[in-house]
Image (cartoon, rainbow, N blue to C red):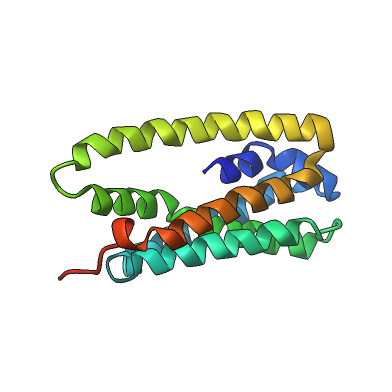
Length: 171
C-alpha cells in the first residue's frame, strides 16, 4: 500500500517528468477503469486462488515499477504502466482483507480488521511522506526504484506466507 500511495499521491509529478503533465486526468481514467476490472477479476477468483492472485498482482506491480524507470516520456508505455497498476491495485483491499481474515481465523477476525484499517491509513500517510521526500531529494524518476524495493519485500512476505495466510480453499 505504501508503494501504491507513493505513486498515486505524486502521479502528477511522475507524469510531468515523462512529458505528460497535461494528461493526469486521462491517466487516472485508465487507472480507474483498470482498477474496476481488477476488482471484478478478484471477485471471480478470490475463493479458489487467493495466494495466486496476490502473487500475480505483486509480480505485475513489480514489473511495472521496473518499466517506470525506462518510460522516458513514452506515452504508450506510461498508459500501459498506469493500466497494469490499476489492475493490480483494484482488488488489493479485498485480497489483503481476505488473507488477514483467513490467517486470523473466525475467532480473531474482529481483532485484525481494525489493525488492517490502521495499517492501511499508515501506508497512505507513509506513501505521502516517502513520495514527498523522494520527489524533493531525487525527483519523480526515483519512484520506480522505491516502489520496486517495497513491492519486492511484499512479494517475499507473500511467498513465505503460504502456511499461515493462505490456507487451502474449502467449499
